[in-house]
Length: 117
Image 1 (cartoon, rainbow, N blue to C red):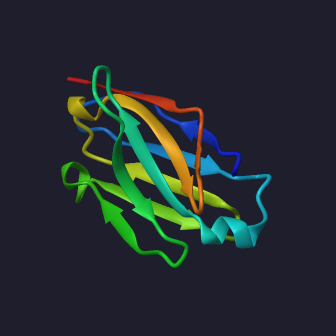
Image 2: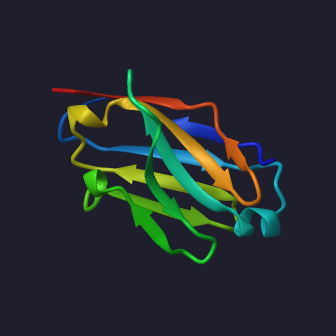
């Protein structure tokens, strides 16, 4: 299990930008690097869905709905993963969760992102 601490999020107008960060301060670097890090989101009444993920070597996957607008990155030495969100839309409103996946899943506490129209 990896302890994940999220920051960022908040309220923004449509077209704006936000940056989410996730840190794993209690995890040793080699373990962090072995985890696929991801951001998921869950809107009210909907299932949790993958937004973006990144492997330890930097291979990324994005949901079709965020391609070209969101960028995921990681710093293995600092044990952090970041989601830069631009051109935000009201439909991006959700609770965003950081995820670490190796042989098991670890989740952050979630951070609210609200995009007003």
